[in-house]
Length: 382
Image (tube, rainbow, N blue to C red; front, side, top):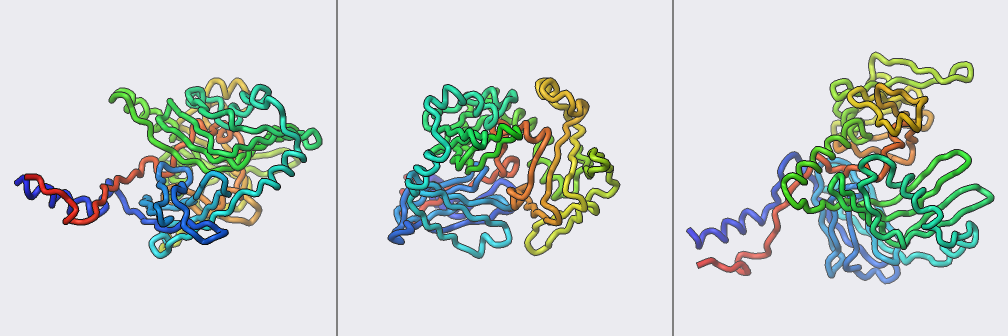
């Protein structure tokens, strides 16, 4: 029996195995744009997931992803980040090729001259940045920014705007949800005139190792709580046509006599012009009105939120999605929606920031057994 064991293990490991659902395999190559030579050690990951890898000596990579849509990002120190959107409908038919270009230092120097770098920026703006980027929730309070020294702060008096950049990924340890987030920050801006913050980047989640079963259960419960009423929860519920069952209601917000009024909707999906493409499995929504109010009835806003925003509803979580006029968005099975820059979020959902983020593969994790090369290379247990 012992002699048969390695052969059985080899057979089991030679075929990827998954815990649930369907999956897609994404393969590709990363090259230097200048020489077309392969780039080894580049980080390749599905943005906002726990799914990533590094390129081998030939620049090749392979990712296993649950069905859905993703932005595949490639990062390497000293090079511009490259990304490509893929989905279930096209990933198995395509091998991606990324060409990496060196960052242009001249452009960065121009930005420094134009905006003016703040000396001791972390001392002056550090906590403000943490509040606006990581958040002010209970989960955010449990986050630790491990490398704040890499942040660079720029303030424009003319525009009354703060800009923050980082030459390397920020490392954020979320002790509440059990993740370490490596966030390749493109830029963070805060407009003081409108009190709005915008940040773009490429987050990769890594599972933290629990010290015991109790901690693991705490993380699982905290993740479940963070998921409830989140944008990810809403998009998945909308995709599955289960808004009411999951606790969501939507309404249109319209301006009448210089005042914004809400219009309750009887048919959510009709008002959103919900359609699903059976071939691509992508849902398209194009609301009849550009401003959509989202009510989540199963949770109330936190006490600190109600204190800071007393004008907001206290009995339910209320958020607002702003669509571009006459424009639609696509939603994938995993809750990924595109194009994300075409939507604006207000009210409750702007309260949840990086400290409350969950990866797109949350609840849809897959487990791939390791592959071994050949039978002849495997030792036989005597």
